[in-house]
Length: 306
Image (cartoon, rainbow, N blue to C red; front, side, top):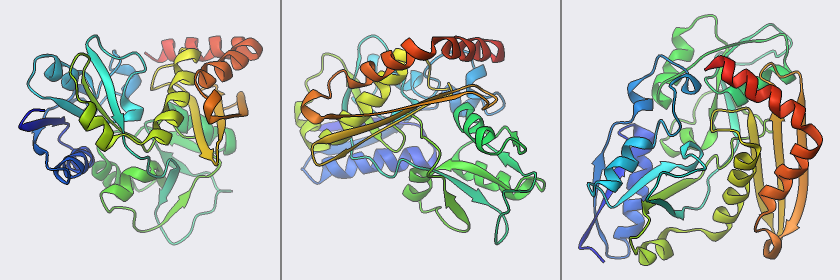
């Protein structure tokens, strides 16, 4: 193994936390590390919604390039940001143990009345669609930027009541403060709350994988990402998926929903761990067999937005 492992990461506070967590896990095993900050297109362009930037992997492409060019040895990402079809020459080496996968609403004031006509901020098509499904009278406005920027925007936009965040991100950088509500009814993005380490395809980092990889998280996130990939929906599409393991049983819940939230399909299925390979594909096939027309509508809506 190399004397020192160069870890590539985006420069945001949350991305740095994730890279430092990987470094700490390796350092504890006597492996020296160096963190290398690399800007991404998704961080540079904070004006357009993610789905309008125009290519897959807006947060990962620059790190993939650094890997291929041997500027770094491994890269650390939020797994939900990683395309299901990886760049040539890149592999997902290890998936860390997942944190809380839930979405939350961070809101202003001491309480919140959902019966009122509220304005809520989010840049996620999936979150917007599910919110409008549950609260059709509410208004959703776009929200971009890193976690700190988005939290500040809640306070500076006087007509906003709150905004939706991934709970894991706020908790990781000690910003889970003030008023928030767990959105237990909202199905998260595939692999939400999980951190992945990627490497070059032909590099032998089996030792790093043994240190970093959490098998149950890898099984669950693989199912979720397989489901999304088989639906043929990108990271920005209104598709949700969550798999959990209790004892030896894998429980899965998947979602497809129209952008306006009016049409929604949820699938819930279970299997055993030993039969979990290909389970996400099986769930997607069932959805596609019964609801291909809705999938076609969603794809057309996404294309129109872009």
